[in-house]
Image (cartoon, rainbow, N blue to C red; front, side, top):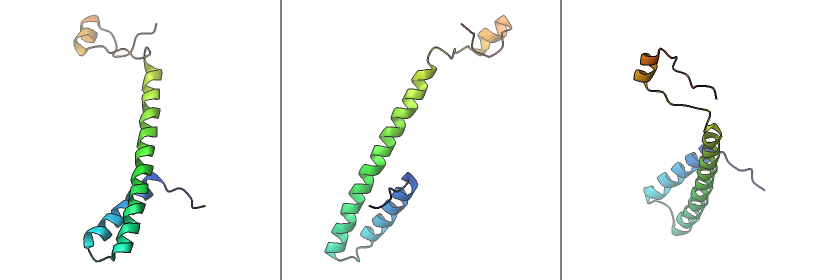
Length: 87
């Protein structure tokens, strides 16, 4: 079984496939095979992006309630440092 590419490797392969297909110099069968591989790589990249988005959202959600936004004017008026208040 082939090793799964990294996101960067998949993007680089997609770029090569795009260049080859845009050249118009490939036979139909080769173009079809490259197109099929390209669709596989697009799905792989989309899955990676979706997974990363889920992880980032989970990290953001874990911070809720721990970070407090304070305006510069409010901090200056109160002489408070620009840090979140502790509960």
